[in-house]
Length: 111
Length: 112
Image (cartoon, rainbow over all chains, first blue to last red; front, side, top):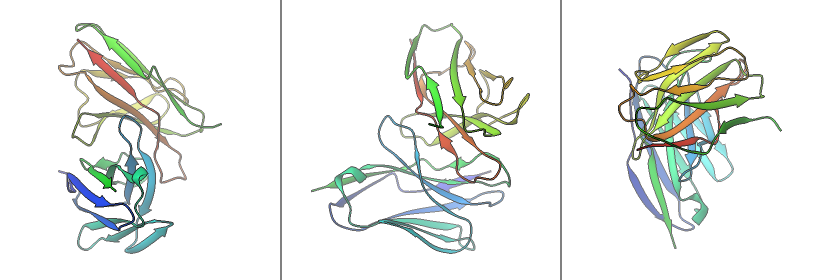
């Protein structure tokens, strides 16, 4: 089976840094994705990791350790508009194959 | 502009009726996917298609049907056999040389 775990909810203060963790156990591994989803809207792509290490993109960074089945999404200089759900997803198989999603982490940014 | 369109955004149906959700893309993507999202749940795969005239069941295909007669279109029919059809339905696609899945805006289906 496929299993992806991430915390259900987190709260952080505007201007701070927050780290959202994701652990996975899947039948295979061909990349890990982070998506942002505002309430009632479609997910939007944030990052992709296929090799170990840190990928930085502006205020957002994503880390992967394949040996530990672990990833995190780091959000810096939090803004109120970052309040959203963050979805961790893994592509177990190669090619144009489906992603397996975690249940998402709902982040609330407070003043 | 290239993208994925889903229509309508909100859909209301009576129990016992079949309903078809539209998904169209002009990204020239080979693969298309249908996911369902319930409150507090992640996205769950209903069906996917990697090429025209071919599709595979996902984890929760029971009560749903699809067709892929054209590369651009991947409609999903929610049949009366689906026990809990009220949900947010998301269509996605990705190209052969792209790792990213692009999502449409979604259709929120309410069945009463």
